[in-house]
Image (cartoon, rainbow, N blue to C red; front, side, top):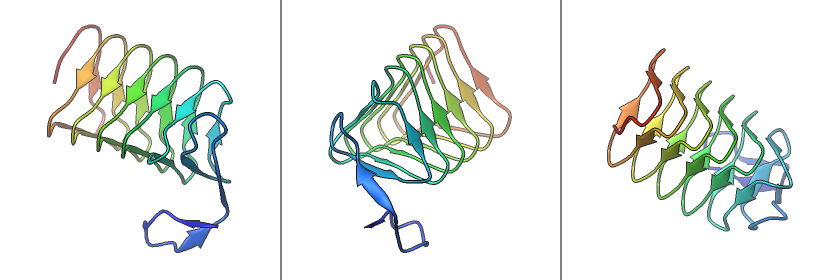
Length: 125
């Protein structure tokens, strides 16, 4: 059991074999993905392929992170958001709702990407 501090109290969870971060039993994380010791994946979130969730990053809700994407620092990817390819979300950035960050795009600092927004190719936000 682990409390992700999302208002749901302690839920069934386990530490990911590649990195030791906490993963709710309702979430799906590939063995090839990395979830660092202070990172969290919960809700119905999915982390696939060689994706990397590190530092204090959180992936939650119905969000999906895949490919070689990286979510780090204090970044949040939540709701139905998707981060894929070689995209990076870092700093205090948030990607949420149904936003999609992909390709070689970078979202960092205090940026927020939401709604139906797409950030792609080599864009930096």
